[in-house]
Image (cartoon, rainbow, N blue to C red; front, top):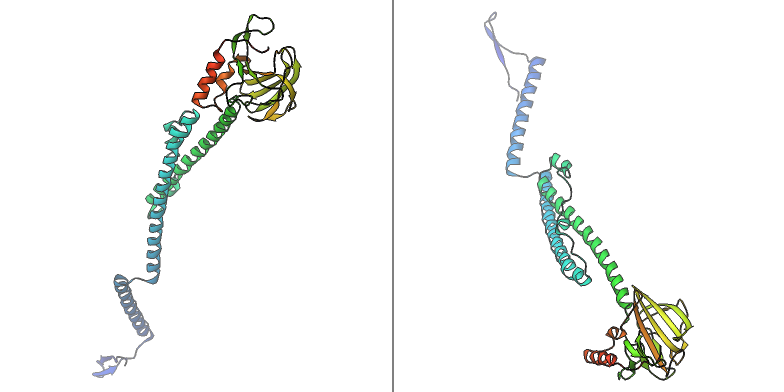
Length: 325
């Protein structure tokens, strides 16, 4: 019910009913609207104080999830750092030690990943958790750098290991004929009585007495460099093993390989014969390192145990007559 207003008319000495003007109506409406807005604001503030809006609840949940993900990522990055540190330790103290390579300098592994300007854009922002984000970003960048260093290191290790493997396979390491009973060795390396000239002469290899046709084997991986009949040596095979190593097999009966053929340790290259300057069927075997003759007896370590090796060294040291050149 609308409120009725009256005013006193002095001319008639009576109270008369006041007519509401348009202005009064507008003012009244504004007043009602203002009061309504004020009450609404008070109610909203009171509601927000005691209750959360759906959008606030959603945002709060999202923040909680992000914080949880951050903690999980931080833990995973820390775990990866620990695993990588273990791999780096094995790299330096085991793999490199075995292969004879110097460990990676500590200052290289622990180097930084950029200057103070690296995270400038993040620092300038108004992110609520920017310090956490910068910290995690720094850990991830350091992890990336360490991984890249380790990848390079592993590649180097593989290259060196491959080279070492090829080098070990290229070192003469077995006897050139089957000699399990150690009875075939007839003459060792050094000054020996020449079978023809009967004078003391340098014997540049080892003689293995064996029947004609006995298989002769390559003592290391290599490439057949020469197949020929040489003065004094008779039918001869020379293998270039690389890394400065060569071996010569002389007085052969026939050949089982061709020039340029790649052979592996233990592969047959020919047969024992009696060609060239020879007084009996035998194999004359030489080892050359960088063009210089070495005592072949020191290169039988792969197919002999310690006792057998000691015995064959003693047999080779006996000064007897060689069977040929």
